[in-house]
Amino acid sequence: MTQIQELTYQLGQMNYEGHTFDCLPIHGEQEVLQVIVSELDAMPIFVTITDTQILCITYLCKQTEIQPERTAELNKTMLELNVAMPLSSFAIVEDYYVVFGAMATSSSFNDVCKELITLASNACDALEAIENYLV
Amino acid sequence: MSSVLNKIWTALRGGVREMGDAIVDSNGVSIFEQEIVDAKASIGQAKHNLTEVMARKMQAERKVSTLVEEIRSHETYASKALDQSDETLALEVAGKIATLENDKAEQDAIVARLTGQVEQLKAHIKKAEKLIADHERELSIVRTTESVQKATEQVVENVASNSSTLNSARESLERIKARQEMKQDQMEAGELLEKEMSGNDLDSKLESAGIKGESASAADILARIKAAKQ
Image (cartoon, rainbow over the protein chains, first blue to last red):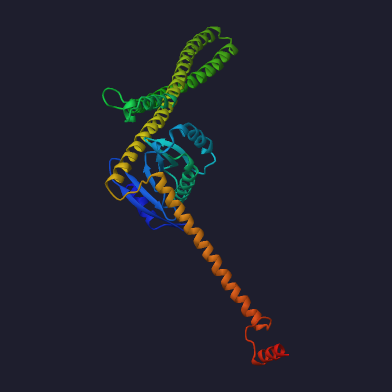
């Protein structure tokens, strides 16, 4: 069983602080698991496990969804907010603004649950925070 | 660290999509991977050499201590020969001591040289181990970048092809707001309900205490009508 499969199985039967996790594996060259946290279902999380890290990513919006003349301002704001945002950071992957959390592969399952819930909450908050920058 | 980040940085500026390509040589092998393999092999060799050198050093050290003992006992012999006023014998023993001391000096030099070699080999192993750790971290940066790119591509493809969800920011926002409104409504409904319940509760208490009641008696009504007539 790969780590992703194990995580899928464990998350499926977990109830962490009142939240449940709806998992959908996305097959391909890179194993990815889509996780939707109950109550925070607007922001699905995509989990990838590499040699050293468990990466949890939420795709905030496409770069093209941001008012072009305010991009620089938004980028700076995100950098300024980064440290304060618990367990997650802003980043850009390909065409997307993302909020992500990176954990050691040795993290406990409980830590992963906590990360997922915190990340989904952060992503929802972040999306509201950038609303004024959307085209 | 900085070298690999620099390469990724340059690749990103240059619009390279496959991050792995940024650090792959002409043979399609990651430079880091090859260097890690080489460094591991060199550590293996160095460790093998180290045990050999250490064994030789221990051997030489044993020889030195044997020679030291022999010198000491010959010094005793010489002293005893002198006690017996046998100058010739004493001189002969002294000659032997000289040979022994030469041997010892030789062995001391060997020990010193081998000690130097041990230090060198240990330093070499340490350096190779650090190189491996560095490269493994660098490699993980590259692999992670690749994984994230691939994962994103797959997510996007998957969204296009089926049920997976990757909404626009506006859609996600609407969803968040709808959920918040729902929560707010639920909370208000809950409060309302509670108010009603506790209100009813108060009414019933007042009624039972006779302070508040709707049940006007026939006598009261008659008295009111009579009063109005007057």
